[in-house]
Image (tube, rainbow, N blue to C red; front, side, top):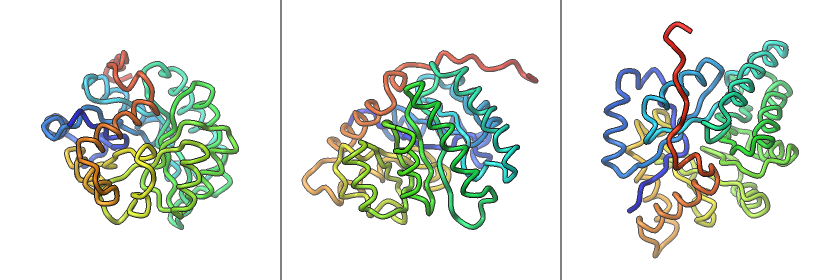
Length: 264
């Protein structure tokens, strides 16, 4: 099996603090060749960029504002979105995508739907202008997230941990060529397993849906359960090709990012 791509992981999470070297070593032993590290706000985006610079042979960065981190005050939300967009633009040649961005319509999220849509739409616009992929969160907002992507003319997106209707996913994959990533957890994504293989990517959402990226092979096994007759090797190779097609050539080359001096 060729090197696998984990298209969505949170390696700056405090749960993994001080453990990254071991996490990466175990991922490499498990056949993972690339890990796309997503960010949640401006400060986390800087941390992601710094971490990726430490491990340029395996880590790739996405910069973005997660819907759970969008401030409830619209003015503050605009300011935080501005900060994130500035980082995206300044590092557009060093990142593989914009994320984690999207919508979250669960009751615990403080920002209103209108404020979330505004932040999401602005980040989509920047991603489209810079020809960057979007790494999308859509908890209890699957149809709305897809609609927002379409309204803002996005053509390159992966929806992670998608919990919307399978029909919405199938239509988005067919009409827009959006991808959907499969995590090792059977609680999410099982309805997506029958999508065409070219529409599926692998993710762990580590440390949320799997402890760390080394568990990525479990995602392949889930896909294989719905695509009888395909080997794990062929699924791994297909999902890697699809990830490379989505994220572009930067996925295959080391980042040129230089970490900011300590204390800056």
